[in-house]
Length: 213
Image 1 (cartoon, rainbow, N blue to C red):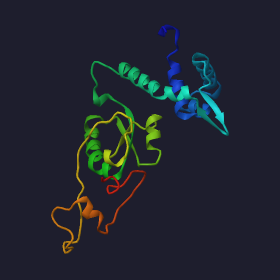
Image 2 (image 1 turned 120 degrees about the vertical axis):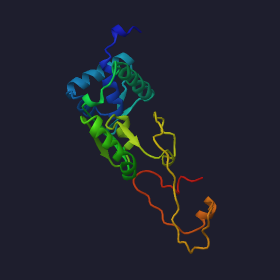
Image 3 (image 1 turned 30 degrees about the vertical axis):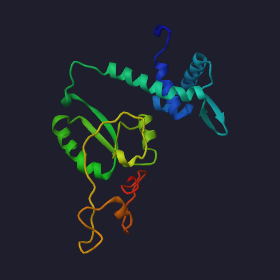
Image 4 (image 1 turned 30 degrees about the horizontal axis):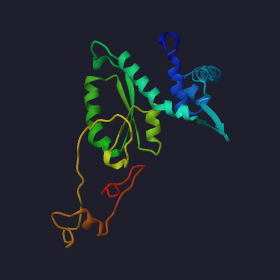
């Protein structure tokens, strides 16, 4: 198919509809009215010869074809953004943008505090909006309601299927009573699991002990 016959703006509408699964919310996401978004949906249905969104009870669900389009559409949009964002050079001091980051208090303390200090000097027009970890953190990232999610890879318990890069490494330490005879210099996972311990679980992520083999 020749691209000259395709309105690439429909990709944005398709991505919003696939993510939101709701015509009104998809329109709000793209700052267009419901009639305009309904018209885009009609054009997309005609193009794919598929309803894409079908009613199931009170909700709209994706058809099998629509489900198969979610990742290719997201990949295509990312590629387009990469091309259009290319410039001869980026001057941090002249940038003005707000980035939404989902991260834990630990990441905020260890990593973002230093980043904020650097941005204040080198890119004062950049603002960071930090949100705590929540159950829907992956959905917010996929719907582009967040720019980054920073979390320990070990705590996800599964392959997220999203681009990622390691930022830094850290290690867990064990705090124990120095007079506890069962605790020695090298403690195996099995030995640790056999002892009573206090564990903290905060938010949707698995705790450190839950992620151990």
